Length: 259
Length: 178
Image (cartoon, rainbow over all chains, first blue to last red):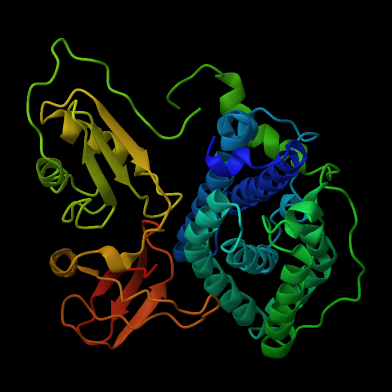
């Protein structure tokens, strides 16, 4: 335990664990969806790009779960590979099937923008270990935003078909994206204490940035859908098969040291 | 609790050598980056600190380049082996994220070796804006032309992008600035 963790109350520690796990779970599941394009992306360069992005997101999940280890001694590998769908706390947004290329790029753009802005705010966290992780990860995340913002533009301003698919993807994703900005239990107190970014402020910046890009630059129309209010523990039918595939090797060989 | 330390087992005899940190730095300067073997881990600025205590115990602190870099455990083991080869029995390899690694720490000599190897060295990272859609200017490592096009924003490793030079027509890899 570092000096910083000793200063946390039990309630603060539990809330911090919930937030770190939520972040890691979103990264792991989205990385898996990105990895599903390996060998299937429209061109070789994009195959490699999505594999790179997925690898970065898994790196970030490792950082978040490493912070959790400091708090409760948990094993990141066990959390990733031996929790079922009822224990994962990712958003529905990241677990939806990968869909077509427009859906994949739109989701990645909306997520990357959220992550970049959250991390940027987290660099000012009074919890020093989190501030250090955020300073590291934000440097990597900016490459994802650059890449997926360009794809959103290219698809929206491309052919009639690519535009139709991009708008359809936006219509489907937009209500689910709201779930990224829901507080976990006890998070408000951590925001108050300066340990975590204010999700409301991050949401406002995110909304401004993605709206300017998607409507202003790409000419898309934002749907009028309201916020999706499902808690992070309630999943669609798509998560369980994803986990079954992702966890298969680990669960079949639980004592293997080298995979 | 795993804080990244790796303790070596005690050897049969206590160390009697009087080891200077400079000798450890010199040994680490010979450890190549596993993915770009023309540069060493010290060239890359990854080794942040070396301490040797009175008992000959060596502690090396390094900083990872990319958080998802698959070569991290190889680097960790290589550091351990390089120090052990000096006759040190007690080695601790620690990693730190503070301050975060930046390509600005790659030394001048290594930049030239990257260029000769065909990889465009990174432009200064500095404190650029978070959301920036234009990539930094890059020179062709073969002909030094700035008339280059990025063909893929992600390359064969996390740290690189792909380019084509419109002057000499050669494709090349370029280091991302982080």
